[in-house]
Length: 341
Ligand SMILES: *Cc1c(COP(=O)(O)O)cnc(C)c1O
Image (cartoon, rainbow, N blue to C red; front, side, top):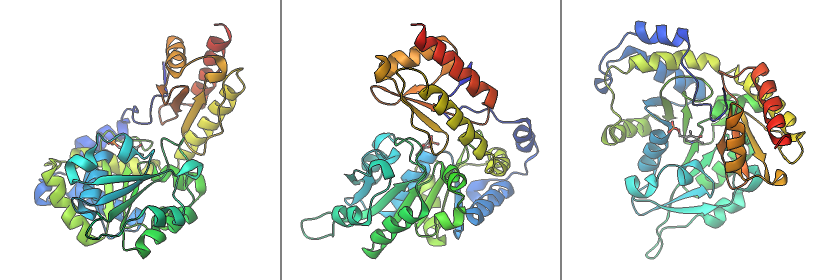
């Protein structure tokens, strides 16, 4: 089985398991867990923010950020294909009382400054007002697009000029940085806060980091507790997270494998596959007369796992547990399956 459903399916390495076993721990709700404290300090430094908070999931990190930045009744400005809008179960509405206003970020996967200005709303007797702008990098639903620093900066500056705080959903921030050869600190310097996942391409079993100014993180600790994310001897899961931070540079291997996979599949008659920026490969199977559901089933039958990503689109995600030989074999298996139907 070649599992390309997501970069979340990776299994913790022996080194991660040993780190978990040997971790020094304490009660993190009291701030007593030295391993969590070390992870938070290291993550804050890596992205150049004053402080960071360990949270159980990327979703919780984004939801805490929205709650802390915006007030109930305000608007969150997001891309219509943003993870926070499409895949977080309406959390902005239910957990923070926010109304979403969506823009279409298009292929560049980030709003232009003009889009930010056009969609931002100033609070008045009749108007809710914009409480937060959310950006996403890499942009998952738009095909793992690595958004250049200049585009993030321009959008963030436009919002901050209007007094609107900016949160970056950087579940795959390090994929973007590796693909663009950009320093993470520089990439997020103009956004107020950033969430990044340890449990995706970096391979940790659990957890994400939320980073930002000291005062923001202080409030985020309270909201994390309220959302049920206060954890006790969390050093057991923070320790593999520290090991995961050593996996940033090797994301380049996932990107190279994704390119091999995309080029191989694009050569199959009926399949159309753009060359990816990062580790997400999106296959359009309409030309082969296959819906995404039919294509995923065909691949599944030959031992290649992916996920539907629209009516005719399927997502394959390269990851830590998938080798070059695996993606080459995946191309052969899928090519045979499509051509011998
Ligand atoms: C996976 C993902 C998240 C959420 O992370 P979880 O840990 O699965 O909750 C948020 N944003 C993006 C872009 C993601 O891909």
